[in-house]
Length: 145
Ligand SMILES: [Zn+2]
Image (cartoon, rainbow, N blue to C red; front, side):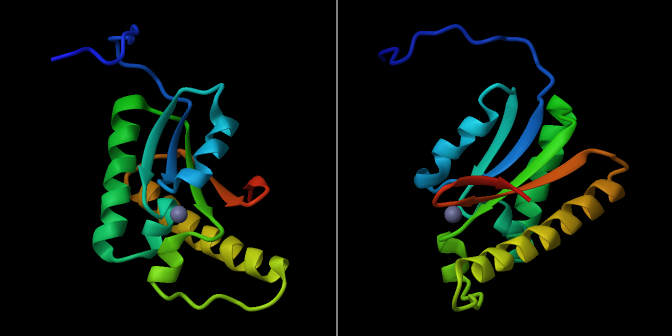
């Protein structure tokens, strides 16, 4: 055995500033800098919040992760991220609009509205009033929607 990282880790439980649902696509990991001054519970899975529009199993996996974060770290905000060019949309063959960047962006904005509705309904069922925010990653950065 060999210790490969030496640093101190706070042993006590903490209150998170936000629960983030993020895509594992490494290109978009740099956008996490938008939350660098916050304590976050990071749920990083392929497709990020797009999983909430996926199969029932994918949806329940992410909702269970959000529930776990809320129970353990009590964040006041659930922040949901999807990004342009995400492989998940291609794999699921969700039809993409052809044409202008703005039209494609609108497709993702529609997705985020539907995803936000799903999480707000889930939180309501859980009896929680946690705020839900949504973000779109694109090739110029991060947009709060
Ligand atoms: Zn992705």
